[in-house]
Length: 124
Ligand SMILES: [Zn+2]
Image 1 (cartoon, protein in one colour):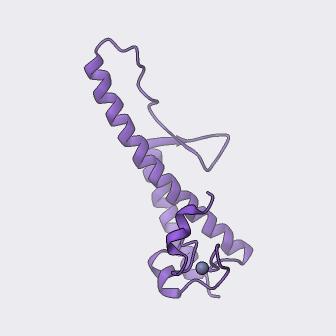
Image 2: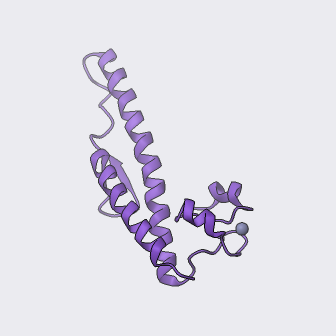
Image 3: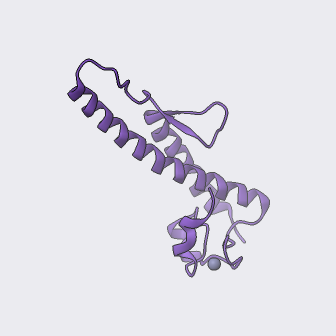
């Protein structure tokens, strides 16, 4: 299949995601698929417990955003790897061809439309 267009779209999105991720955290030097929130979780021994509560909540929110971006980042890296391998566009569950309109909507899709709901069950 023709993958050049998808590859370009994926690379563009990967660059944007890397930018967003680097604003929220740092890449784990030992595992390039892992991003760590910075600053780290606020210390629990802070003088003002209310202040800790606010900062902790904000941290949780940042962690949540980072985690969602990280999942997307890894999906895109996986898709680019599949292009290299020549297995791009194949459903990871049933092995069938992923529909073109699905790939156009999400170039990092891992499953065909039939297996759409099972995509979340796939290992990272
Ligand atoms: Zn499928």
